[in-house]
Image 1: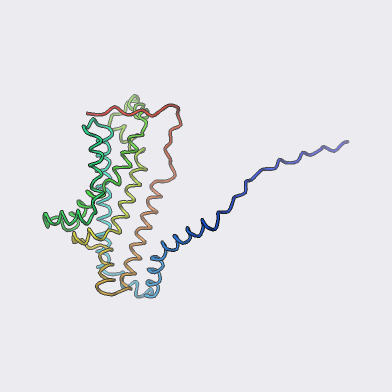
Image 2 (image 1 turned 180 degrees about the vertical axis):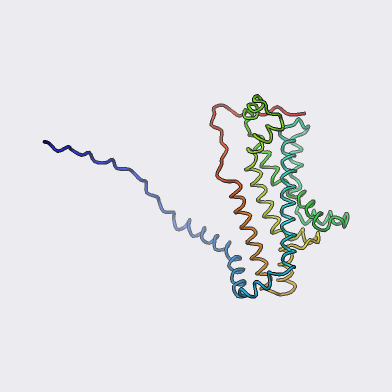
Length: 274
């Protein structure tokens, strides 16, 4: 008997990764180190205070009041901006609104005005705009373009064939918006909402004018007026933790879903609504 000749296994070609140049890595490492420097300072000051002192500083009604104001401001402004931005984007891109190009510029102007200037203007008109309710209104009118712009761009490039297919299957206009259009706009809305929420967590100038006590204003008072580095570091650590939680929640809500168009042809624009 003759032994069967075994064929050699095919060799799989694996391309070697080229290491980046040191002149590219060094600037990146420098920027990362500079970005982490404030976090390192807060961590060192919090560590010097110790666990006992940290619990004593954080477990107070004052801190819980700051957290309540900050969370209510963040949620109120974010939800208001999402509703206003979505409504204005739909009116601009899906209705026969006259002067659409002019409105597209006018609706972005509030974002070009600094928020503390807007706050000073509203407070100068009336003292009723001070406090939580006034802060939500003033900040929402200043930050809604962060939702309006990406949602309007998504609506402008959205293929209407999916919406037309849903209408032919018996869905009402409102049902098509809720089941088809809104899920396609969800990634753009979440991106803008994340930016607004983070802005509200770290906003300082406008809130100091509006008379709302949040973590940022309390940190400034502890560090600049009362010369207490430990209190300021503890409050800063809580604020940083809230920012990290917001980033984690946005990743969880958005998930890994992606919306792509795989059909041939070009996306058609929707018929404008009167």
